[in-house]
Length: 102
Image (cartoon, rainbow, N blue to C red):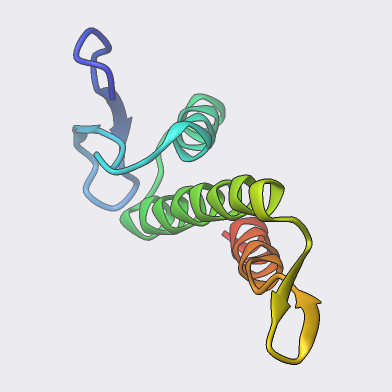
């Protein structure tokens, strides 16, 4: 989160008290955008929902990082047995699936 941006206040359903919910400090651009979009659309997230959002945001970051590396390396990589699918394709696919479930 940018120092100039205040922490978003979210009222949890179970505690009934307002508390600032700052995004995890290690989120990158894609994860941060997902975090902010979700909090803007829904207020009153429970602690469990916040954990799910955090997992989804981190998965989004992982998917974007894998996509960036795939663009640099290509969809296939040379191995001793010939050309194979870039293993990062599976990483991206798994991360995107986790993000959608979150």
